[in-house]
Image (tube, rainbow, N blue to C red; front, side):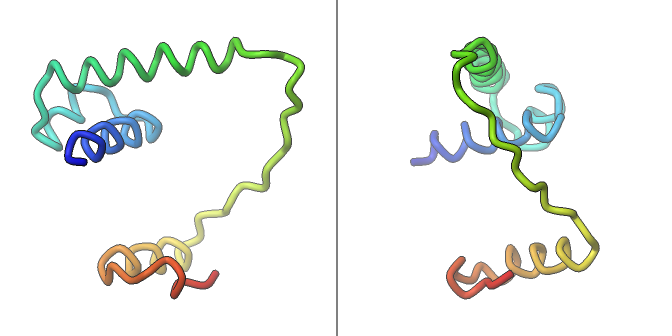
Length: 88
């Protein structure tokens, strides 16, 4: 489970636009782990983008990150409450 959380944190950071070096410094993970996860993620991302063009892409409405929304999320993280209790 620990390794899964590590991989998840690295991938989320990559999605947020962070570079591997910053991820290594922030989380204090080993270079080999971080670069390996980043390499595999990039390869899977390329395969996904090259995937079948027959699939329809549905437009999803993006959530606007208003200050109120960010504040509620920060409070949620700090409180560690159940996701069921959080109503948007």
